[in-house]
Length: 389
Image (cartoon, rainbow, N blue to C red; front, side, top):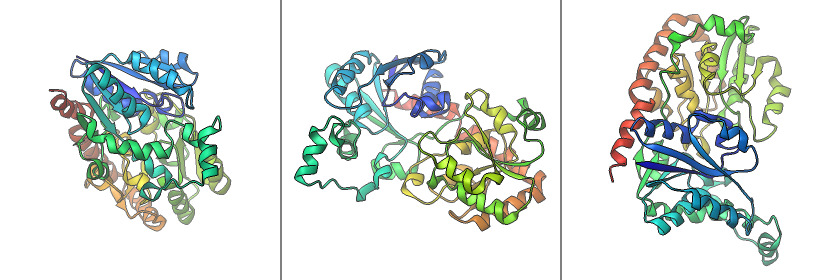
């Protein structure tokens, strides 16, 4: 069997940013465990050579025009490259599900849909409305870069939601999305063989990356306001211990939010660059605590933070907020606080460092929970039932 994973954005600001660490590549890993051939087909603007060097996946990158009508030429090229027995659209977008359904009409092959975000949540969710004046409507249609010439404009994102039922299978990674769209719960899995704490010495990692003088809280991801990094920094400011630091790994490709954080809290932050997925276990090993301080927003509720399973797999104490599926994911193996509560985060930081042995024991329990429920093998077991069509 061959499965074509259709990805709307393979660029360095899309799934290409984190390489094998994000959802399409996790799906690919899990499917390969079932002896399924996988190809990843998607759009990109430049950077083809970088993706072509990925030895783990067959990647077909289509150079995309970003506006109609030229986008239709890119879409035709992509459709011609989808050759799988099953078409698996990643993300609820016209540029993934929409094109996958077109290919289904052409080939009569089944379409699966994987939803890992509520795309409209980035635009106000259900409150988003398109009510232009006639003049604005004309501009949106006629201008070369008009809003309605963008294939994934919110107008089309809202429209494509009505086509979820056209997919033969739907997979989602949290209960918020499942309640909204239906389908099968398929949590993000971690490669727990790669993320294995017995392979790494935390002190060696801290020395190698210049962190040995500090007690390290780590946020291995791209900060955005809803991810609550500010609450951790306020907590550090309140504790005011000079050896505490928040290490941000990778930074944000979306805006200048990193700079805003540095301007206000730079004395508490250590910034590290983006690293390949194979290096991340060594980076995470350097942490004393992993922080996942999501705020209670629609964007956060619709996500499965990959930072959680980074920390769980590496047996790290985790401070996380009671948002979305986070309490279910960590169970009683983490330190849970209310969202937007710097004072609670501060209390948990002090609790952990006052009894690090107990916290590390909890970390080992978190790893066992990750292996059982949130590993690539756990993903593969669920997918094995879905592909029996």
